[in-house]
Every structure is written in structure tokens, then in C-alpha cells.
Image 1 (cartoon, rainbow, N blue to C red):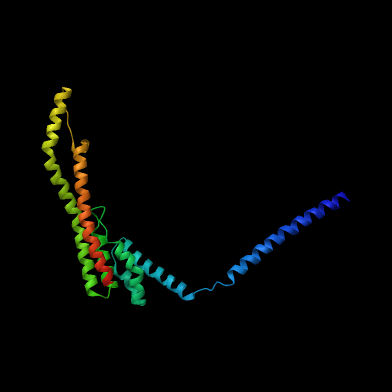
Image 2: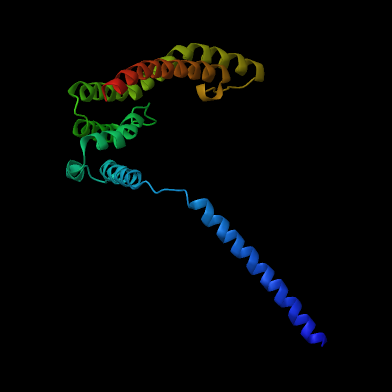
Length: 208
């Protein structure tokens, strides 16, 4: 009799657990009954994704091949521009290295392929040329500052040599004041470029 009692207890627990599961399932069904699937939105999202993947393949390919952009012609022009606008606008930023010319050329080709407004395409090309100048201007600025700071550095070097009674060689990289001057000037250069870029990007947004 005692064994039967244990089985009944387990059965009650199992029934209670199944009841909870069924209740949760029923609640989930009730919550999803009013949800309608927007097939058009799904189609648009899938289309946007395919277009971005086509552009991504072209931009990241080891060898520049404009033929990779050919599949874009099978899509509606407005959808292509809408999908690739963030890609093109995102490409307009200060380059972090000197090896950016190839990517900028690809962005320029992509813009000329996508944009149906000649003025917008021309403005995009001008902005890329503007950004190409940045690394050169940055390099020139640093070199000029190094030359200007050289007398100050030599003076500090002489003072330290006299103080310690031995020859002290001081590099610009070792001098906090010199580095601060260079960094402040580089920040100012970045600000000037970014201010000009931001204004031009607003005009480009209108022309997209």
C-alpha cells in the first residue's frame, strides 16, 4: 500500500508539471494570434541584405573587379541606393593609414554605379580626393613641427647634460611638452578636416 501511495504522488506531480507546460504553451499561442507577418518587409530586408553583400564582395575582394557589381543591375535603383547609402556615407571618414587609395577608388566606382544624380556622384568623388590629401597633410605637419621644435629640444638637452654631468640625448618622443604640441596641432588638423567633411556630407545627403 505504501508503494502505491508513492506512485500516486509522482503521478500527481507529473500531471501538475504537464499542466504548467500546457498552460505556458497556450499563453504563447494567445500572444502570437494577433501578430501578422509582413511579407513585404521581409522581402525588402532580404533584398537590402543581398545588395549589401554584393557591394561588400566588391569592396573586400583581393583584386578590384568591377564585374562584381554587375548583379546590382537586376535590382531596383531606389532599393540599391537605399541599401548602399550607409556604406557610401560610412566610407567618408578620415583615413587611419596611408594605404587607402585602393579602397577609395572602389568607393568612387561604387558611387558612380549606384548614384543616378551626376552632381551627387561628382561631389562624392571630390570628397574622396579631399580625404586622400589628409595623410599627406598630416605627415607634412608633423615634419614641420619637428623642425620647429628642434631648437627647444637641443636647449633642453644641453641643460640636462649640464645638470647630470654627462651627455644626454633627447628625442621628441621622449619630451612630454613636444609631444603635447604635436598632438594639439594634429587634433586641430583633424577638426578642420572633419568640419569641412561634415558640411559637405550634409549637402551629399540632400543629393542622394
